[in-house]
Length: 68
Image 1: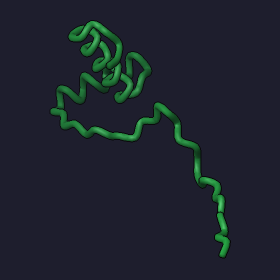
Image 2: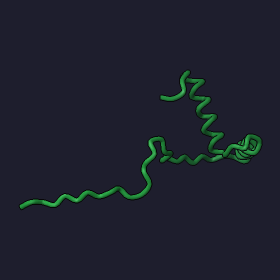
Image 3: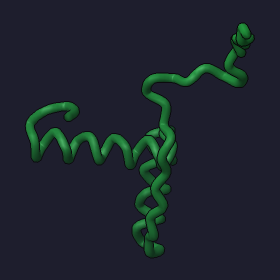
């Protein structure tokens, strides 16, 4: 008895290799929120982009390289 093979196409958008699939929530006091918002306003970058840049700079400073 022969079996049927069904080929199905994947649905939805294709996965991007470097997609941001994880989130992080941080708690800030009023002063920290003000400073982050001021950096955002002055640079025109989002608060998330500022945080990511600061994290990359700190990583580079400590480990001496860009990424893992």
